Length: 300
Image 1 (tube, rainbow, N blue to C red):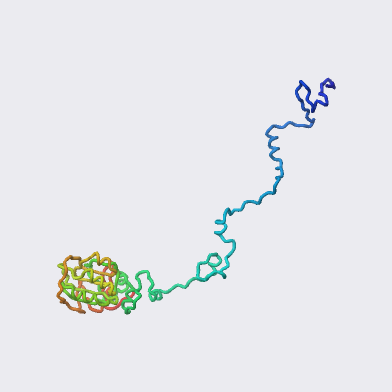
Image 2 (spheres, rainbow, N blue to C red):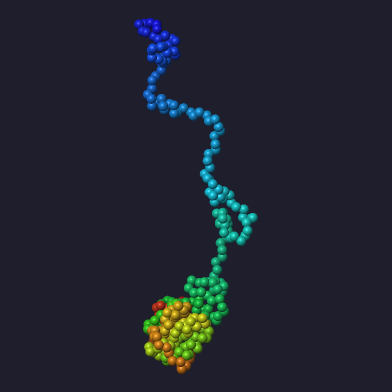
């Protein structure tokens, strides 16, 4: 210990060597400034990190496995080496480069047996009447609006709304074949066993409500033979079976009793049904609005 200016200073060797029986005292430089603990910790955190003993690894890739890397191609595929049987492009540039496919006309679809919006064209050959009926189903309301002059001169007539709708085909049309019977269905069966070629059989049964002159078996034969529809001024039976057939049927009502088997009747004669005179060879148009009869074929 030494004395200077009335102050007791520690011995120079006591700065680093502790003295026995006394507390250790460390002298700080004169320009030392004591800072709070938080500032000292912050200064330590701002120090640059120590160099690592091994080289740094590259950053991890976004693709973690082969599933994600293989789903999206990094370049357009070489289509020259690919088979030409696969028409679907797998690159956006190829979509713009491929020309659009040509659209088929309605007549081509019918000739190839394709499906149209309204009806299905038949693959077997048929006369022109059946082909016209398959391609031109007309709505009765539009026919009346477009042919008012024919209604005025009597060439276009509407049957009274007395018929019930049966069969799966609610819209049908075709040239008329007339038949006149009374409580007898032998001639009805004979007609429907022939080829229909898109025609419509109009049967005048005298409006009898005592028996049915048309059943499920003849209607099934009519469907297979290409008849477009059947209009009966009388009753029918086997309604569930008839409703499953792809043909249009109109009748006054249904009746469980069968008709006679005598074969009495008249073919291809004018008949009067629902207040309208109908002749053989005229045209009939039927839908859910009603039934029209025209002397000639109509077009809207």
